[in-house]
Length: 142
Image (cartoon, rainbow, N blue to C red):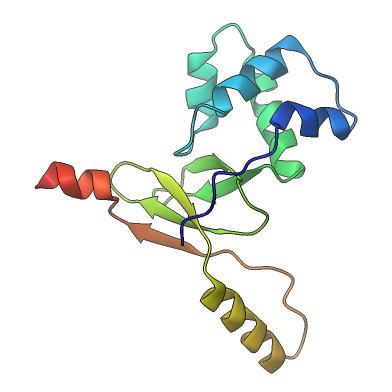
């Protein structure tokens, strides 16, 4: 099942965590909210030349630290981020265009609980990313 489109108001989350709301930070967040399929830090910096590179990176790091974006390491080693729309989810990453889509699957969560019962220790978390060719790329190829 694809994850719902619920997403917290990023500026409210930042403010609720006690961080200042500056105009450059507001500009970065506003742009990120238009990127449903993932983004790179340099892509954001390139789209906002009036915002310093350090501000872009610090804002992305802040959002990552407070859990409203996810960090993905792509097959080529580059880093891409996506907005987190649900508390816990997994990712589909298109190997052609780099689109990132979130999905939920209760079977995976049951499997993790079953594995947790079998391991000596405690599972603290997990990440699942599937490399796919997205529907748009498949349609374009046909």
